[in-house]
Image 1 (cartoon, rainbow, N blue to C red):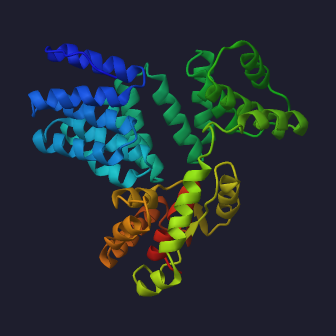
Image 2 (cartoon, one colour):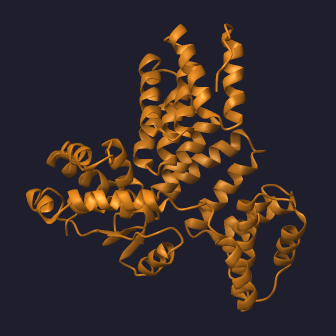
Image 3 (tube, one colour):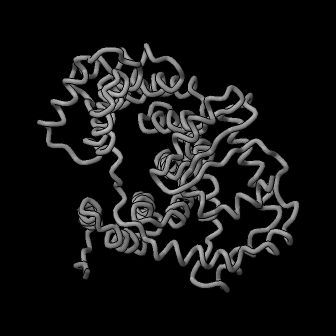
Length: 387
Protein backbone atom coordinates (compact mmCIF):
# COMPACT_ATOMS: atom_id res chain seq x y z
CA UNK A 1 0.00 0.00 0.00
CA UNK A 2 1.36 3.43 -0.98
CA UNK A 3 0.73 5.94 1.79
CA UNK A 4 0.09 9.60 0.96
CA UNK A 5 2.66 12.10 2.17
CA UNK A 6 1.48 14.00 5.23
CA UNK A 7 3.45 16.81 6.81
CA UNK A 8 1.32 17.48 9.89
CA UNK A 9 2.25 15.15 12.79
CA UNK A 10 -1.27 15.17 14.24
CA UNK A 11 -2.65 14.07 10.88
CA UNK A 12 -0.01 11.33 10.70
CA UNK A 13 -1.00 10.04 14.14
CA UNK A 14 -4.67 10.10 13.08
CA UNK A 15 -3.96 8.16 9.90
CA UNK A 16 -1.89 5.56 11.77
CA UNK A 17 -4.69 5.11 14.32
CA UNK A 18 -7.18 4.61 11.48
CA UNK A 19 -4.95 1.97 9.88
CA UNK A 20 -4.55 0.12 13.18
CA UNK A 21 -8.30 0.13 13.73
CA UNK A 22 -8.60 -1.68 10.38
CA UNK A 23 -5.88 -4.18 11.27
CA UNK A 24 -3.32 -2.65 8.88
CA UNK A 25 -0.51 -2.66 11.44
CA UNK A 26 2.44 -2.73 9.03
CA UNK A 27 1.23 0.44 7.32
CA UNK A 28 0.73 2.08 10.71
CA UNK A 29 4.28 1.05 11.65
CA UNK A 30 5.62 2.82 8.58
CA UNK A 31 3.91 6.05 9.64
CA UNK A 32 5.25 5.88 13.21
CA UNK A 33 8.73 5.21 11.83
CA UNK A 34 8.39 8.27 9.58
CA UNK A 35 7.37 10.39 12.58
CA UNK A 36 10.45 9.18 14.46
CA UNK A 37 12.68 10.05 11.51
CA UNK A 38 11.44 13.64 11.86
CA UNK A 39 11.48 13.65 15.65
CA UNK A 40 13.70 10.96 17.21
CA UNK A 41 12.54 11.82 20.73
CA UNK A 42 8.81 11.64 20.10
CA UNK A 43 7.78 9.40 23.03
CA UNK A 44 4.19 9.07 21.84
CA UNK A 45 5.31 7.71 18.46
CA UNK A 46 7.82 5.41 20.13
CA UNK A 47 5.20 3.85 22.38
CA UNK A 48 2.61 3.59 19.62
CA UNK A 49 5.23 2.00 17.34
CA UNK A 50 5.93 -0.62 20.01
CA UNK A 51 2.22 -1.37 20.40
CA UNK A 52 1.77 -1.67 16.62
CA UNK A 53 4.80 -3.96 16.32
CA UNK A 54 3.39 -6.22 19.02
CA UNK A 55 0.02 -6.32 17.23
CA UNK A 56 1.87 -7.20 14.01
CA UNK A 57 3.49 -10.14 15.81
CA UNK A 58 7.01 -8.76 16.35
CA UNK A 59 7.41 -9.03 20.10
CA UNK A 60 11.17 -8.47 20.12
CA UNK A 61 10.98 -5.19 18.19
CA UNK A 62 8.16 -4.03 20.46
CA UNK A 63 10.26 -4.72 23.56
CA UNK A 64 13.21 -2.79 22.11
CA UNK A 65 10.90 0.10 21.31
CA UNK A 66 9.55 0.30 24.86
CA UNK A 67 13.09 0.01 26.24
CA UNK A 68 14.10 3.05 24.17
CA UNK A 69 11.03 4.95 25.39
CA UNK A 70 11.85 4.16 29.04
CA UNK A 71 15.48 5.19 28.59
CA UNK A 72 14.49 8.43 26.88
CA UNK A 73 11.83 9.37 29.43
CA UNK A 74 12.29 7.32 32.64
CA UNK A 75 9.54 9.17 34.52
CA UNK A 76 6.76 8.43 32.03
CA UNK A 77 4.47 5.72 33.45
CA UNK A 78 2.93 4.81 30.07
CA UNK A 79 6.13 3.23 28.72
CA UNK A 80 6.49 0.97 31.78
CA UNK A 81 2.79 0.10 31.50
CA UNK A 82 3.15 -0.88 27.86
CA UNK A 83 6.12 -3.12 28.62
CA UNK A 84 4.32 -4.75 31.55
CA UNK A 85 1.18 -5.34 29.47
CA UNK A 86 3.24 -6.93 26.71
CA UNK A 87 4.93 -9.36 29.10
CA UNK A 88 1.57 -10.21 30.68
CA UNK A 89 0.15 -11.02 27.24
CA UNK A 90 3.00 -13.42 26.43
CA UNK A 91 2.48 -15.06 29.84
CA UNK A 92 5.59 -13.70 31.54
CA UNK A 93 4.13 -12.01 34.64
CA UNK A 94 7.51 -12.41 36.34
CA UNK A 95 9.01 -9.99 33.79
CA UNK A 96 5.92 -7.77 33.72
CA UNK A 97 5.88 -7.16 37.48
CA UNK A 98 9.00 -4.94 37.83
CA UNK A 99 7.76 -2.65 35.05
CA UNK A 100 4.27 -2.47 36.54
CA UNK A 101 5.73 -1.61 39.96
CA UNK A 102 7.89 1.10 38.38
CA UNK A 103 4.78 2.58 36.79
CA UNK A 104 2.98 2.37 40.15
CA UNK A 105 5.76 4.40 41.82
CA UNK A 106 5.30 7.11 39.20
CA UNK A 107 1.49 7.12 39.22
CA UNK A 108 -0.17 5.06 41.92
CA UNK A 109 -3.67 6.10 40.85
CA UNK A 110 -3.53 4.89 37.26
CA UNK A 111 -6.37 2.42 36.59
CA UNK A 112 -4.30 0.81 33.85
CA UNK A 113 -1.33 0.30 36.19
CA UNK A 114 -3.48 -1.09 38.99
CA UNK A 115 -5.19 -3.49 36.59
CA UNK A 116 -1.81 -4.58 35.21
CA UNK A 117 -0.55 -5.26 38.72
CA UNK A 118 -3.70 -7.27 39.39
CA UNK A 119 -2.98 -9.45 36.35
CA UNK A 120 0.68 -9.87 37.35
CA UNK A 121 -0.11 -11.06 40.87
CA UNK A 122 -3.11 -13.13 39.75
CA UNK A 123 -0.96 -14.97 37.18
CA UNK A 124 1.79 -15.43 39.76
CA UNK A 125 -0.71 -17.02 42.14
CA UNK A 126 -0.68 -14.21 44.73
CA UNK A 127 -4.44 -13.68 45.14
CA UNK A 128 -4.10 -11.44 48.21
CA UNK A 129 -2.03 -8.82 46.39
CA UNK A 130 -4.10 -9.16 43.22
CA UNK A 131 -7.27 -8.43 45.21
CA UNK A 132 -5.71 -5.42 46.94
CA UNK A 133 -4.73 -3.75 43.64
CA UNK A 134 -8.00 -4.43 41.83
CA UNK A 135 -9.96 -3.15 44.84
CA UNK A 136 -8.00 0.08 44.68
CA UNK A 137 -8.81 0.39 40.96
CA UNK A 138 -12.51 -0.09 41.77
CA UNK A 139 -12.35 2.55 44.53
CA UNK A 140 -11.00 5.05 41.99
CA UNK A 141 -13.55 4.10 39.34
CA UNK A 142 -16.56 2.23 40.82
CA UNK A 143 -18.34 2.28 37.45
CA UNK A 144 -15.74 0.02 35.82
CA UNK A 145 -17.66 -3.27 35.51
CA UNK A 146 -14.71 -5.08 33.92
CA UNK A 147 -12.64 -4.62 37.06
CA UNK A 148 -15.51 -5.96 39.16
CA UNK A 149 -15.35 -9.07 36.97
CA UNK A 150 -11.59 -9.19 37.64
CA UNK A 151 -12.24 -9.03 41.39
CA UNK A 152 -14.89 -11.77 41.20
CA UNK A 153 -12.57 -14.02 39.19
CA UNK A 154 -9.82 -13.50 41.75
CA UNK A 155 -12.20 -14.38 44.59
CA UNK A 156 -13.35 -17.46 42.68
CA UNK A 157 -9.82 -18.72 41.95
CA UNK A 158 -8.75 -18.19 45.57
CA UNK A 159 -11.60 -20.24 47.06
CA UNK A 160 -13.90 -17.34 47.97
CA UNK A 161 -16.77 -18.44 45.74
CA UNK A 162 -19.40 -16.73 47.92
CA UNK A 163 -17.82 -13.31 47.41
CA UNK A 164 -17.49 -13.97 43.70
CA UNK A 165 -21.15 -15.00 43.44
CA UNK A 166 -22.31 -11.71 45.01
CA UNK A 167 -20.42 -9.67 42.41
CA UNK A 168 -21.57 -11.80 39.47
CA UNK A 169 -25.21 -11.51 40.60
CA UNK A 170 -24.91 -7.76 41.03
CA UNK A 171 -23.56 -7.40 37.48
CA UNK A 172 -26.29 -9.67 36.08
CA UNK A 173 -28.94 -7.56 37.82
CA UNK A 174 -27.40 -4.42 36.29
CA UNK A 175 -26.98 -6.10 32.86
CA UNK A 176 -23.26 -5.30 32.90
CA UNK A 177 -20.46 -7.54 31.50
CA UNK A 178 -23.16 -10.19 31.03
CA UNK A 179 -21.05 -12.77 29.18
CA UNK A 180 -18.35 -12.90 31.86
CA UNK A 181 -20.92 -12.64 34.67
CA UNK A 182 -22.99 -15.53 33.31
CA UNK A 183 -19.95 -17.73 32.84
CA UNK A 184 -18.55 -16.80 36.25
CA UNK A 185 -21.84 -17.45 38.00
CA UNK A 186 -22.11 -20.87 36.33
CA UNK A 187 -18.63 -21.76 37.50
CA UNK A 188 -18.58 -20.59 41.11
CA UNK A 189 -21.14 -23.09 42.45
CA UNK A 190 -22.45 -26.59 41.79
CA UNK A 191 -26.11 -26.77 40.80
CA UNK A 192 -28.52 -29.51 41.91
CA UNK A 193 -31.66 -28.27 40.15
CA UNK A 194 -32.25 -26.29 36.97
CA UNK A 195 -31.75 -22.61 37.93
CA UNK A 196 -33.33 -19.52 36.38
CA UNK A 197 -29.78 -18.61 35.38
CA UNK A 198 -29.74 -21.40 32.78
CA UNK A 199 -32.98 -20.14 31.22
CA UNK A 200 -31.49 -16.65 30.99
CA UNK A 201 -28.29 -17.95 29.38
CA UNK A 202 -30.14 -20.09 26.82
CA UNK A 203 -32.44 -17.20 25.95
CA UNK A 204 -29.43 -14.93 25.49
CA UNK A 205 -27.82 -17.48 23.17
CA UNK A 206 -30.98 -17.52 21.02
CA UNK A 207 -31.65 -13.79 20.85
CA UNK A 208 -28.39 -11.88 21.21
CA UNK A 209 -26.23 -11.19 18.18
CA UNK A 210 -22.78 -11.95 19.58
CA UNK A 211 -19.30 -12.74 18.25
CA UNK A 212 -18.37 -16.44 18.18
CA UNK A 213 -16.00 -16.12 21.14
CA UNK A 214 -18.76 -14.71 23.37
CA UNK A 215 -21.29 -17.30 22.20
CA UNK A 216 -18.81 -20.04 23.08
CA UNK A 217 -18.51 -18.62 26.59
CA UNK A 218 -22.29 -18.80 26.98
CA UNK A 219 -22.41 -22.37 25.64
CA UNK A 220 -19.65 -23.29 28.07
CA UNK A 221 -21.67 -21.80 30.95
CA UNK A 222 -24.85 -23.59 29.91
CA UNK A 223 -22.98 -26.86 29.47
CA UNK A 224 -21.47 -26.62 32.94
CA UNK A 225 -24.85 -26.09 34.63
CA UNK A 226 -26.50 -28.90 32.62
CA UNK A 227 -23.63 -31.20 33.52
CA UNK A 228 -24.11 -30.33 37.21
CA UNK A 229 -27.82 -31.25 37.14
CA UNK A 230 -27.20 -34.49 35.24
CA UNK A 231 -28.54 -33.50 31.80
CA UNK A 232 -25.46 -34.87 30.07
CA UNK A 233 -26.95 -35.09 26.57
CA UNK A 234 -27.73 -31.38 26.38
CA UNK A 235 -24.56 -30.48 28.25
CA UNK A 236 -22.55 -32.28 25.57
CA UNK A 237 -24.33 -30.30 22.83
CA UNK A 238 -23.30 -27.01 24.44
CA UNK A 239 -19.74 -28.20 25.11
CA UNK A 240 -19.40 -29.32 21.49
CA UNK A 241 -20.11 -25.77 20.32
CA UNK A 242 -17.87 -24.18 22.94
CA UNK A 243 -14.93 -26.39 21.96
CA UNK A 244 -14.98 -25.51 18.26
CA UNK A 245 -11.43 -24.33 17.39
CA UNK A 246 -10.94 -20.59 16.90
CA UNK A 247 -7.47 -20.57 15.40
CA UNK A 248 -8.35 -21.49 11.79
CA UNK A 249 -6.30 -23.87 9.67
CA UNK A 250 -3.29 -25.42 11.37
CA UNK A 251 -0.07 -24.72 9.49
CA UNK A 252 0.95 -28.38 9.28
CA UNK A 253 3.68 -27.70 6.70
CA UNK A 254 5.31 -25.14 9.04
CA UNK A 255 5.36 -27.55 11.99
CA UNK A 256 6.59 -30.43 9.83
CA UNK A 257 9.53 -28.36 8.61
CA UNK A 258 10.31 -27.17 12.12
CA UNK A 259 10.23 -30.69 13.57
CA UNK A 260 12.39 -31.97 10.71
CA UNK A 261 15.02 -29.30 11.35
CA UNK A 262 14.97 -29.84 15.10
CA UNK A 263 15.44 -33.60 14.78
CA UNK A 264 18.48 -32.97 12.55
CA UNK A 265 20.05 -30.53 15.01
CA UNK A 266 18.85 -31.77 18.43
CA UNK A 267 20.45 -35.21 18.56
CA UNK A 268 21.62 -37.46 21.45
CA UNK A 269 25.10 -36.00 20.91
CA UNK A 270 23.64 -32.49 21.36
CA UNK A 271 22.49 -33.41 24.88
CA UNK A 272 25.67 -35.34 25.66
CA UNK A 273 27.76 -32.26 24.85
CA UNK A 274 25.56 -30.22 27.20
CA UNK A 275 25.33 -32.70 30.04
CA UNK A 276 24.90 -31.13 33.51
CA UNK A 277 23.94 -27.75 32.09
CA UNK A 278 20.60 -27.56 33.83
CA UNK A 279 19.03 -27.88 37.26
CA UNK A 280 18.71 -31.15 39.16
CA UNK A 281 15.27 -30.08 40.41
CA UNK A 282 12.37 -32.44 39.78
CA UNK A 283 9.78 -29.89 40.92
CA UNK A 284 8.27 -28.91 37.56
CA UNK A 285 5.71 -31.15 35.86
CA UNK A 286 5.31 -30.25 32.19
CA UNK A 287 2.07 -30.96 30.34
CA UNK A 288 2.05 -30.20 26.63
CA UNK A 289 0.21 -31.14 23.44
CA UNK A 290 -1.94 -29.72 20.69
CA UNK A 291 -4.67 -27.18 21.64
CA UNK A 292 -7.92 -28.83 22.81
CA UNK A 293 -6.12 -32.14 23.38
CA UNK A 294 -6.87 -32.42 27.11
CA UNK A 295 -3.98 -30.52 28.70
CA UNK A 296 -6.31 -28.62 31.05
CA UNK A 297 -8.01 -31.80 32.25
CA UNK A 298 -4.62 -33.45 32.80
CA UNK A 299 -3.47 -30.48 34.87
CA UNK A 300 -6.66 -30.56 36.94
CA UNK A 301 -6.23 -34.27 37.65
CA UNK A 302 -2.59 -33.83 38.67
CA UNK A 303 -3.23 -30.74 40.80
CA UNK A 304 -6.00 -32.51 42.72
CA UNK A 305 -3.16 -34.24 44.58
CA UNK A 306 -2.38 -32.38 47.84
CA UNK A 307 1.33 -32.17 46.98
CA UNK A 308 0.81 -30.77 43.48
CA UNK A 309 -0.11 -27.19 42.48
CA UNK A 310 -1.45 -26.19 39.04
CA UNK A 311 0.12 -23.01 37.65
CA UNK A 312 -1.91 -22.98 34.42
CA UNK A 313 0.00 -21.94 31.26
CA UNK A 314 3.46 -20.46 31.77
CA UNK A 315 5.03 -18.93 28.67
CA UNK A 316 8.56 -18.99 30.08
CA UNK A 317 10.30 -21.36 27.65
CA UNK A 318 8.52 -20.10 24.54
CA UNK A 319 9.53 -16.58 25.58
CA UNK A 320 13.12 -17.73 26.14
CA UNK A 321 13.24 -19.26 22.65
CA UNK A 322 11.86 -16.03 21.16
CA UNK A 323 14.49 -13.97 22.98
CA UNK A 324 17.19 -16.27 21.58
CA UNK A 325 15.92 -15.34 18.09
CA UNK A 326 16.18 -18.89 16.77
CA UNK A 327 16.40 -18.99 12.99
CA UNK A 328 14.66 -22.09 11.57
CA UNK A 329 15.39 -21.24 7.92
CA UNK A 330 17.70 -24.25 7.56
CA UNK A 331 19.93 -26.56 9.61
CA UNK A 332 22.94 -24.25 9.52
CA UNK A 333 21.08 -21.15 10.72
CA UNK A 334 19.33 -23.17 13.44
CA UNK A 335 22.62 -24.72 14.62
CA UNK A 336 24.22 -21.29 14.76
CA UNK A 337 21.38 -19.62 16.66
CA UNK A 338 21.20 -22.51 19.18
CA UNK A 339 24.99 -22.38 19.64
CA UNK A 340 24.59 -18.85 21.06
CA UNK A 341 22.73 -20.31 24.06
CA UNK A 342 25.45 -20.98 26.65
CA UNK A 343 25.56 -23.04 29.83
CA UNK A 344 25.23 -19.89 31.96
CA UNK A 345 22.06 -18.90 30.06
CA UNK A 346 20.44 -22.27 30.72
CA UNK A 347 21.41 -22.29 34.42
CA UNK A 348 20.11 -18.76 34.95
CA UNK A 349 16.89 -19.63 33.12
CA UNK A 350 16.35 -22.69 35.34
CA UNK A 351 16.82 -20.58 38.48
CA UNK A 352 14.44 -17.91 37.20
CA UNK A 353 11.83 -20.53 36.28
CA UNK A 354 12.01 -22.11 39.76
CA UNK A 355 11.42 -18.64 41.25
CA UNK A 356 8.26 -18.38 39.15
CA UNK A 357 7.09 -21.76 40.44
CA UNK A 358 7.76 -20.58 44.02
CA UNK A 359 5.63 -17.50 43.37
CA UNK A 360 2.76 -19.83 42.45
CA UNK A 361 3.34 -22.13 45.41
CA UNK A 362 6.21 -22.32 47.87
CA UNK A 363 4.82 -25.40 49.63
CA UNK A 364 3.79 -27.90 46.93
CA UNK A 365 6.32 -30.58 46.04
CA UNK A 366 5.48 -30.21 42.35
CA UNK A 367 4.04 -27.43 40.18
CA UNK A 368 2.31 -28.15 36.86
CA UNK A 369 3.00 -26.01 33.78
CA UNK A 370 0.48 -26.97 31.12
CA UNK A 371 1.42 -24.70 28.22
CA UNK A 372 0.26 -26.77 25.19
CA UNK A 373 2.70 -25.35 22.65
CA UNK A 374 5.70 -26.12 24.85
CA UNK A 375 6.20 -29.10 22.55
CA UNK A 376 8.00 -26.66 20.23
CA UNK A 377 10.74 -26.08 22.81
CA UNK A 378 11.03 -29.46 24.54
CA UNK A 379 14.76 -29.53 23.83
CA UNK A 380 15.20 -26.27 25.75
CA UNK A 381 13.12 -27.54 28.67
CA UNK A 382 15.18 -30.75 28.69
CA UNK A 383 18.39 -28.71 28.90
CA UNK A 384 17.09 -26.68 31.84
CA UNK A 385 15.49 -29.63 33.68
CA UNK A 386 17.06 -32.88 32.44
CA UNK A 387 15.55 -34.95 35.29
